[in-house]
Amino acid sequence: VLQVAGQVAFDPESGAIVGSTVAEQTRQALANVAAVLEAGGASLEDVLMLRVYLTDTAHFGEMNEVYNEIVTQQPFPARTTVYVGLPEGLLVEIDALAVVD
Image 1 (cartoon, rainbow, N blue to C red):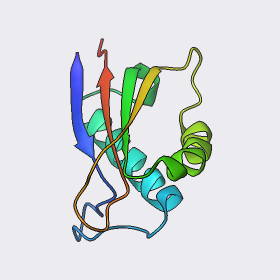
Image 2: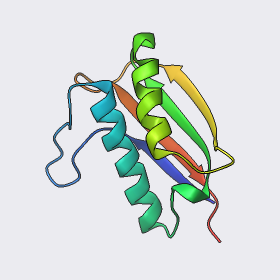
Image 3: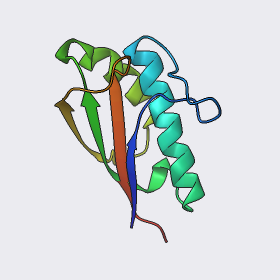
């Protein structure tokens, strides 16, 4: 089992926030999740569950659109979405639980 701690839209090289929209930040957060999975010997295909933390209920549709472009495996992993406070400038955080062979 590989638990990926919450990933936000930080550029792994610079540490700067990538994007000002929830779509841009979702794309970067999922890229960061994928990078951690890869480092642990897994991929998005191995994910059982993702948890998405949004700062605004109005962002759900935009996040979901990007999420569905990237998370395409069947069956879909379970997902929980909750609304939280995040540090200034951050709109989304995503964590994952995967099974590694």
